Length: 103
Image (tube, rainbow, N blue to C red; front, side, top):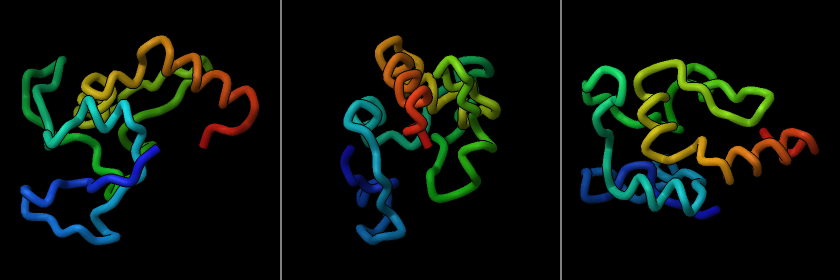
């Protein structure tokens, strides 16, 4: 895990506690400085899920098998671009769920 700006300073956001989020290294590398991308289902340009705004459960759900299922366009974009359902990541999530250590 690493502490990273939710929005880059170049995107006119300050480096402050309100603009920091705990992220995994893989997610951070996949996201880069992008604010959003094309939704794989609609072709529209939704933003990524913002960890500082509506609850995680609004945008995605975590299934018992460890896969993350998107519920909204920002959720779908975030799951797709950040590769949240790659096999290794799902396996890690399954293990954490089984031991009661997944949020």
